[in-house]
Image 1 (spheres, helix red, strand yellow):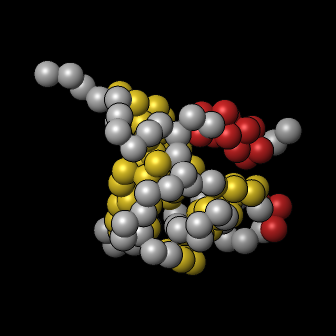
Image 2 (cartoon, one colour):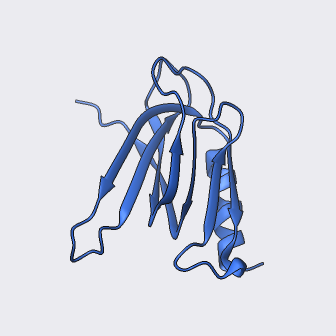
Length: 120
């Protein structure tokens, strides 16, 4: 198993309990950073408790397509495919939310972490 498929497998394990979209943030880097586009989404376990969330960052985003986000209350189903062997410049992954057509993209890197809500 190559490192990209291993990352996808680890992601699938982490994603299993998270699916409700709580944030969708798109940013573009500076000219020094090559105007690299980054998408960060956050998923919760339920619609009423955001105690733990899964933060996912897609870096080097290309061909982003976004569907209807307004009023969205549904579980997101993400399919990530390793396309590193296709030899596309700086593109390693294809990402599709396939159940509700919320978004799709190509990217060079994916990072994720489970984050907890800080209590006061």
